Image 1 (cartoon, rainbow, N blue to C red):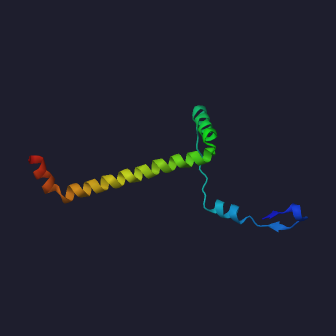
Image 2 (cartoon, rainbow, N blue to C red; image 1 turned 135 degrees about the vertical axis):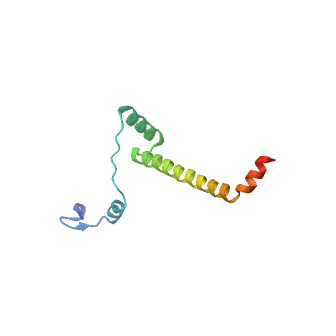
Image 3 (cartoon, rainbow, N blue to C red; image 1 turned 90 degrees about the horizontal axis):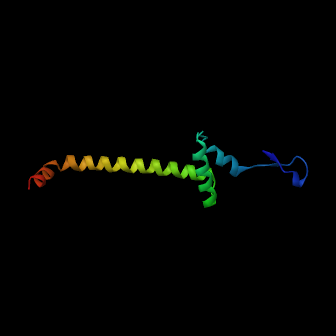
Length: 93
């Protein structure tokens, strides 16, 4: 709860958006060397975005890609298992 000083002293103002935003966000410490930090800063400046936004986008890309790759591997194993006989016959042809 903050005080809105523009309307006189001691009138409370709720920051609903800010409190809801922080309830769903976790903090993660990321250690970067100087060159990594500078590259992130330059990319953020060039795109007009925050460094935090770019780092989160990178994490999403990596985690989404890994999940997709595992799904493809699982489906490949399933197809190979279910159609092993057919695949063997095709390989012998």
